[in-house]
View (cartoon, rainbow, N blue to C red):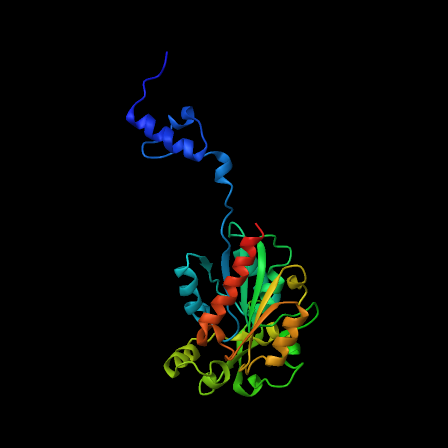
Length: 284
């Protein structure tokens, strides 16, 4: 016996036909919904999540201008807080954050955060692109301090002071902070004075041990890389940034910006990240 056709069944059937499903399947759809074939559910894999890693003397707020621009375009963004206590332990912490993300990841690091992402992304299949913003791109066996000293131009040593802090197992560690009166000139030249003052007050110290610890992984050897060279950088010599980017075969842009490029020039930084995002999309 033929089943009577109601207005609901006819409407859902038409919608289902456009989606490529049968009328029988459409009849079981909820009111106002069309049944979607399983094959269609897997045609569009998850969009990449952008994970932003800050560096020394900064915190997650340094990415605010970039986050706003990415979110405005509908991108998912994650900004974990970096402990800044040791390359291995910092990388393990970021790796745990990456493991909580579903789908592909574009992993971005600033300054010391570049060394962290190079380590954390090793053997992390969800990381599809690495983006270095005025950042270290170390090879195995290299430390941040070693790369800083490879080329002339850094004035960080003269601008920092050393403080002691208690280690969890006992004893004292050493950490660096940038003098507040020199912070803007050293780290954020060109950033509005009041903004730089807020950044200086909230700067996150980094342990000397973290800067001395050699890398034990270099994910850029197997994962496509992008790099931004900040030509006014006083922390990492611009020549070192160019050299590291070239060695990593990174897609490189040059911006007249201080070390805090994401604060002073969030537009170009965002544009570079979006180039990496588009590259990940095109590979799917």
